[in-house]
Length: 128
Image 1 (tube, one colour):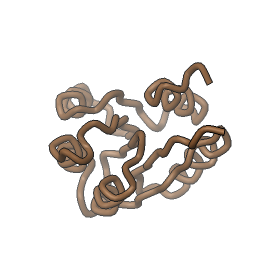
Image 2 (image 1 turned 180 degrees about the horizontal axis):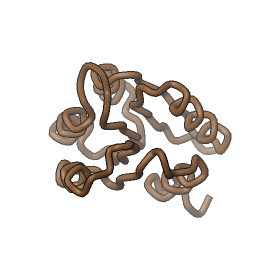
Image 3 (image 1 turned 30 degrees about the vertical axis):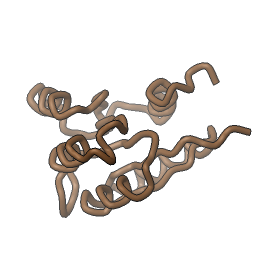
């Protein structure tokens, strides 16, 4: 059996993070959560996930700054980052994309099954 892909979810809403973690684990992903931006940055650097799901409204270090730091750090800049946030203005989407986010999803209207499909697409397991 192949080594499972690692997904780091940086999200302060525990219920939502737990739900996404469960659906990703059910299809074979190894998932870790970080409840704030500071912890998320530390985990990204030490754990080296295959994908980072990132909320923008976070305590300690806000999401745009987390994204900026991850994309400017040689150790983490190649990790794909997908925004999963309730911020959804054109400016937010544009800023996230300019900072290096691969995709932008609005949490309130994104089903967990859509998240699984997107994760498979991004980490190259769509055929699996």
